[in-house]
Image (spheres, rainbow, N blue to C red):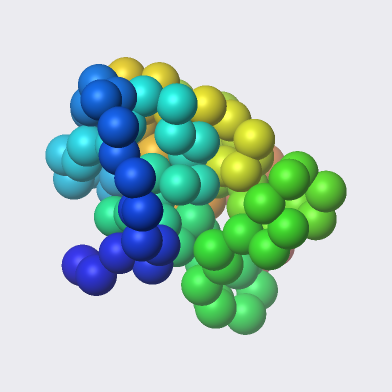
Length: 108
């Protein structure tokens, strides 16, 4: 994938391994989750109803446009969450228990 951001200066930061939709990736110490995902050429998620890709909007935690899920079920704001080694990030929201409940088929 082609990166959606261009890193101007790297410095001597250590690399941080993480996974994105099961794919092994590398970012840099001090990156936010948003920076790491965009550097991989991905979007943070697809919108739940429109299916359009989202890549963050305000980049400071105000707009709510960069929520992501982790493989452990945690939701986080990609623009304000520091990337940690071993994070398992998902660009598609995980199905929650209430979405699987009888009579809830098709409910976002």
